[in-house]
Image 1 (cartoon, rainbow, N blue to C red):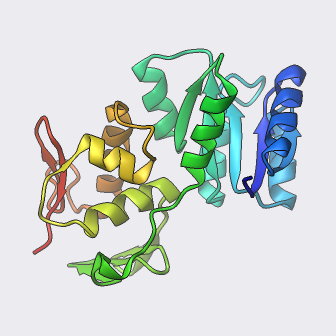
Image 2 (cartoon, helix red, strand yellow):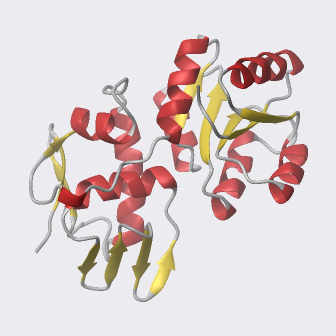
Length: 229
């Protein structure tokens, strides 16, 4: 059985009903919204661990909702869509989503994606120092906080998990497969576009020149490496 609070945002009442029954049976507390406006009302009043968000909402689109959520909340976000192109995935991830699920989907697949979105990379005693300083960047692994030039920089939960794994395994090439399975879970491995998008976002937030990164380096055809002095 799982625990956590989930908000389902979809304009299809049948989908909301099926998700609610399925997720409650798994031990989650579930609320649902049929529109962006209703979702915003719930988000102002309540705290959620994860949001299942239809990308094709009427009125304010799902991507707009995702961007708004990301500016104020650390809830995990899974976008739901009938489209499955790489451009659609990158657009959703750029908006701040943690994952992307294509309709129709199986219940086991959706539950696996939810568990992956809710998991956090554990902080182990063997991981090395819990505070890492890189010129004007401070990375506090315990508080899950980043400051750049003394200013706090907001990272999504998955962005921080990816950065955490990189900085605790420095100066060695980390393959796409290893990063995906460490941060998202054992069911992942082919979602290279996830890494490209999240790495680009991290570079924008911590690198002085994202186009010529100093810390988060690409290992061509392999993966990425975090360069510590």
